[in-house]
Length: 105
Image (tube, rainbow, N blue to C red):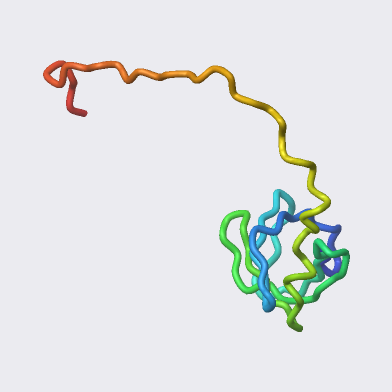
């Protein structure tokens, strides 16, 4: 993400719609109302303004609507399904506890 006067900020897009997106960062947080440019998954850029900031998460409203379908990765580019086969099933037992021996905290 590009912010005027600052180095690029690495972000992870958590959700995206035609009018905006939610993202997180481990970098320097943007400021509410700040205008930014983001590089979208399709390789295009979109400009917008920061609408909210909470912790390391923030919301961005795009200045112009985008096509969300263009941002979804091509499913055919994903690796083929695994051919692994489970041959042994594991069983877990929950230990039995005498309720009279439990302490109330």
